[in-house]
Image 1 (cartoon, rainbow, N blue to C red):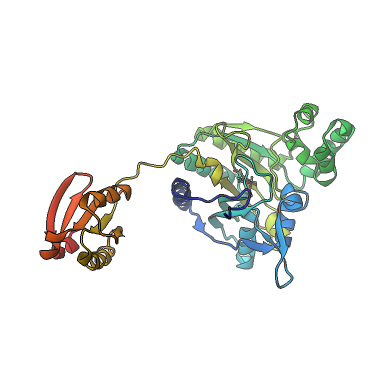
Image 2: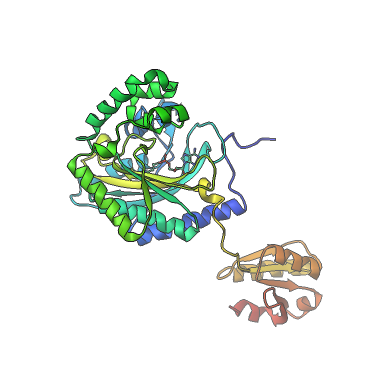
Length: 408
Ligand code: HAM
């Protein structure tokens, strides 16, 4: 038997319904916030991710599905959605339209060659949004509010963590300061931390090793080193969150796993799903369009991990819907097929081609969760009629085929 690859899951039955329910709910909320649907390719040039997510990140350093295609191109299965949307934004020359504000949402599979465990897959799905051209921190707040709306609508409890990662003015001196602090303690920090010291020292703050966390508890904090602009924006963000009643925690160790962030960074976490508790993450990336050869354009966005919230989502009660059709005698099968096509212009119809007893058909209609069972037996066939059973009201009637086709 051939199984799906390790870390890759089928979305089938309830999971498939939940996937649709989550993406439909999030899409309609994003549209109410003025965002438009965008779809970008799963395969992109490897350089795109190197220059955006960053070579020092675990994602690019260790987790890419990367290969050379038949044309000799170095390509990657996208590990996240932001880079592709930014590329599309620049390719469509939207960065050259002065004052243009582009707001996009997307959903689909992402690929990271991670060690699979609960909540951590190699193919997983994200719902994400990206907002271009708005430098005001009010937009960062609005995205956090949109995420809260999505999770509230889906009935998911969450905690909001926020941080500011500063800007090119205040981040480099902070990084040097932090590097000095961690270099003094290098022998007490784990191998990963020592490697990160050379590639991206702020990522050391994100180490999950308890011993390292203990060593780092008095490390300099970025929130104490922000420049005036970053400080003002961060205060304004907190003010708006306070006013809107969205509770949050400032977590100055929240550095995010991707290199493109500046200023606001945020994560939504759930206490109900185990160790991989981050259900959504995002932030501002004001330099990214420039890094990818576009005209400097501010940006901010987030992505939800759909599989992580699947077990927390309860599907709304499925109402009985549509029509189940079947025949009790072979001669009536073609009539059923003909009526089904006519009814399918307006209704959901499923057809059972095998002739069965009335009882067996009613069982089939029940399993299909249909509202109506429409059956042709010997008598109905002779009289050009059908038997209609309303499975909700539990009532029967016999009507002519013509009348049934016209019935709404
Ligand atoms: P990220 O934090 O890498 O951000 O991923 C966002 C979410 O995807 C995570 O919070 C988590 O729920 C889910 N996720 C990540 N990796 C896995 C995995 N291996 N298995 C299952 N779920 C996973 C981004 O991807 C950024 N592009 C978000 C963003 C958009 N920032 C600005 N705009």
